[in-house]
Amino acid sequence: MARRKRNSAPKEKKQNGEKVIDQLFGSLDAEDIEDDIAELGGNEPAEVPALPEPVKKKRFFFGFAVFVIIMAIVGCVSTVRFAVDMTGKLLDNTSLKNEFAQFIFPMVVNDIAPFDSIDEIPNTSKITCAIWNILLTKDTTPYEDGLGGLLIPEYDVMASCKEMFGSTVVMEHQSVGTGEVRFSYDEEKHLYWVQKNIRYLTYAPAIVEMEQVDGNYRLIVGYLPPSLATVSGISGMEVSPDKYRIYTINRWDGKNTLLSVEFCNDYEPATDDR
Image (cartoon, rainbow, N blue to C red; front, side, top):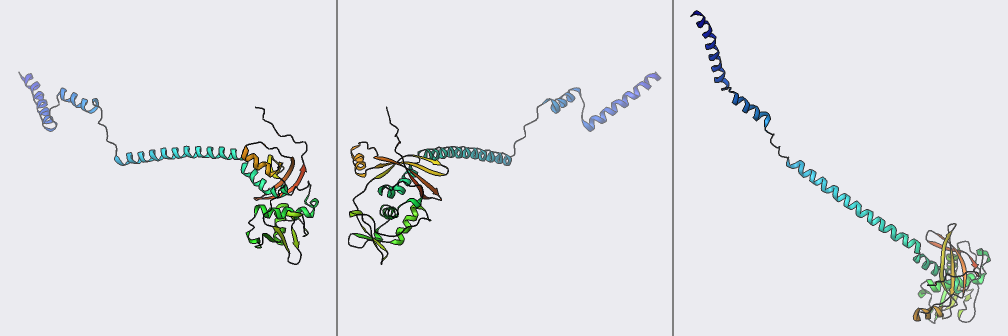
């Protein structure tokens, strides 16, 4: 009987201890513990909502990046198009040919003799080419005398000559030409009297080939009679040049200088057999 009393005392203490724990923390049943473990580790964590400001910044930078890429593509396309256009212009050289044709027009009209240096150009050719340059490419209104003629100062004639043959050219003023194309020089007044409307023209230039050689431009120029050229433009007929010459032009800083004129008797233009 005494043994039973000793065994029952710890059991009562244990029960009393469990009651104290239950009172402090609640009952620790097995089912409750399993539920707690399931709640702690078994369930997936709830999604954390994204902050609004970082999302807006990311969208802004993404949109900006797309805009930059689009502009880069547009820029590349524009650059390629510009390069293609420029290549076409360089290959065609239409504007440059037209500029050269206008530049050599006074020499072609005067039918200047071939030369290798400006010292070989006759003085009369220098004067006639210089005056023709004024008549064909300049505004002659300031030179009108009111009587159907032009009074051109020798200074302007000299400046025109240097414009074509370079600043080192030397020229002596004198009367040149005959008939309608006579340019009379007044030594006292230092003026050239020129008929205002000259109807006589010898040739018009047609540049058939052009290439760069040692930094200069080498042109093969066909000499077209202007009257036939006018008729061909109206009727559609083809006109062949009477002859050909080779012009060598130096172009520097947008200014042209004629260096030489050569014979070109053996030139054969390309034909279209189609």
